[in-house]
Image (cartoon, rainbow, N blue to C red):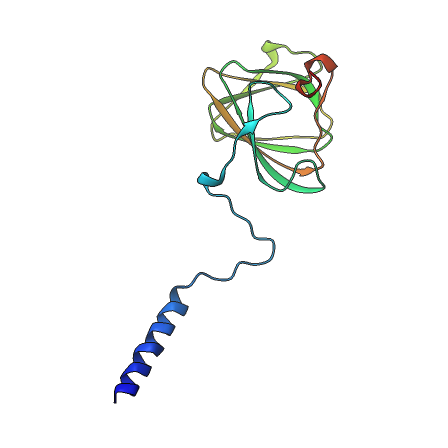
Length: 156
């Protein structure tokens, strides 16, 4: 009788564990929890930070990156060889199209806004009065080419 009870307890314990165990993750599955986000100084725009969440912007393949910029940041005209989708997570992100920074041409995207920027489009950006965080989804390899090389934070 003791063996039968022990068997039943063990059996039901195993069934319970199987029922609450997480499903196997499929190949390619990835996740990043808030505690896993690592902000580093951006090599492109001094004073800003970036966190690469998924993939690698320097390599071929999809990537997800966040950029954190302080109030009053101005990013001079530049292009990217890849199409990008921007999602504003916090603050206010401003986008202007063209080869010269013109504050009068800035479009304002508040938190929860999304826009797609085609590849090779000259543009400039700025932030509002609060710290701003944007998420960028794209496919690498990623490039940022400033129209005026002296604006490139990587070459200073």
